[in-house]
Length: 184
Image (tube, rainbow, N blue to C red; front, top):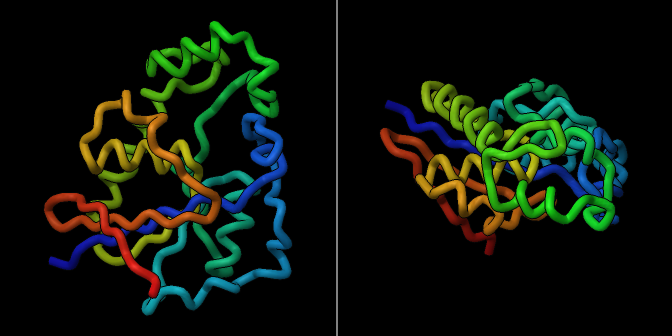
């Protein structure tokens, strides 16, 4: 049986990230049109290219291929009324509750538990699709994926840093494995 290779790539940096604000459907900072297809030859074989529905993931996907498939399961966590808000503008008790209780969503959007459940369902569907998938998505989705494949408790969610344009390599052949690669 052929293995499944999943490469999760975090979207490029956005203006709201640079300002320390919660995401909205904003564009990336870089000249994504000028850089179109600049990373398309990064993989030996042409992978299936997926991305979340937001502008920042679609624009980043354009670096890797001309026709990414939009997959709603790769959408960012919904932060509800906190979209575009700076962390310092929020009620500190609500923010603390959200960061310490994965079932809470004081912003009216998704809880961390809900994001993790959605991503786990998506990864289970990817297991049945051998070959290479490159998915352009968000830090929340990549964290949730790592919790699932590494069987970490949800309490580890905020202990995973995901940088813009970073790649997380996962392999599935009866069991998921995290693969660290060198680029020497």
